[in-house]
Length: 113
Image: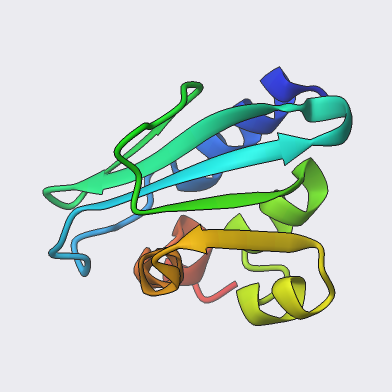
């Protein structure tokens, strides 16, 4: 997977997702290692989700891992705690802000899939 494919998949994951349950500002920078090396961020502001291919210097937390591990977390294939315990992801900063991503309702969750 390339960096471009990673960012595209992250954007696709949150396209039409519902973040209205998150009332505070959340800014998470993701640092991908390996073939998809690069940084992107996920921000929730005013109930809206933004995924952009840039560093976010005022982030609440920074998550580092392979593209596969990052996507496993973002798409809910694996729990954050498991990925950290298995040393597939690391988190610097406010862990509770990273965990808030679970409050985002993905479109497939709305349909009960």
